Amino acid sequence: MPKDKKVHAKVKSILHPRNKHRERYDFKSLSESLPALQNFVLINKYGDESIDFFDPKAVLMLNKALLKHFYKIDNWDIPENYLCPPIPGRADYIHYIADLLTDKNGKSQKQTKCLDIGVGANCIYPIIGVMEYDWTFVGSDIDPEAIDAAQKTINNNPNLKSNVFLRLQTKKRNFFTDIIHEGEFYDVSICNPPFHASAKEAQASSLRKLSNLKGQKVTKATLNFGGQSNELWYEGGELKFLNDMIYESRRFGKQCRWFTSLVSKEANLPFVYKTLDAVQPKIIKTIEMGQGNKISRIVAWSFV
Image 1: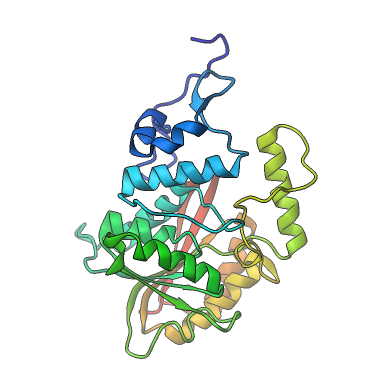
Image 2: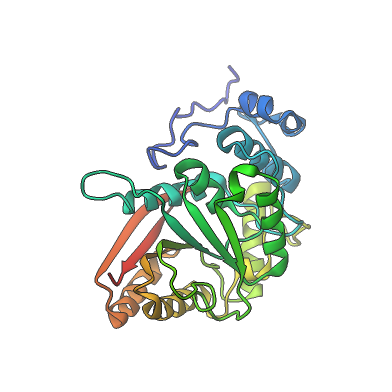
């Protein structure tokens, strides 16, 4: 064992108990599922197998391997410069939503219909929800290229074809209008809002993350899978996004059992609760969950 080799806990206890990614990445098994990953596996300074998380091609290949190994997704890709999501955190959201939809007798909701606001080119939430729980999804997005990329993933994976349907949102300030059709009912809506209030703020955050990964200051971001503008920022930031979503949800209160969203910034919670109080849902719940090295939250509300 190298002198400075880290001793890691076998299980990442911060993740949901049903999350398949609670243990450290097993690069041997992942490479057996997707041999191309082996080209990116290296030994880090602690003597552990890893990849260069600064290299977007390596991160993309890791995601492909995870999706193939754990979720039987043989064909998945995203266009350059689109968000390449951390799969363990995305899986956590789905598992906590499954808990939310479980009745008081512990029985899971069957034939669940889920609406993913901002499905993205990666289509990750529908993939995990279908493969883990056999849910049906409608995914919406304001970006036609993201819809096209997600549709390719659906078309190229037979196990998704009959469970995931995509709709383009043509009005950028709308969330549910023109997406929830007359006569439709959803068990739950999910959303991962843009964190930032401007392109400048998003760029600064990206540079900080890259600097942390690199271990030195990075002043210019290279082309990577960091995300498109609509994936990263919204005028007014996360708080304005959530405020607008909550007010619009009231109009669809009889067509969706639970509305939910991630809230990345704890400081936004009091303002989110204030907005929820204004629209008067019957129930409000806050669910804490681990995402990477931080605690995130799901806020859920229901009018029924």
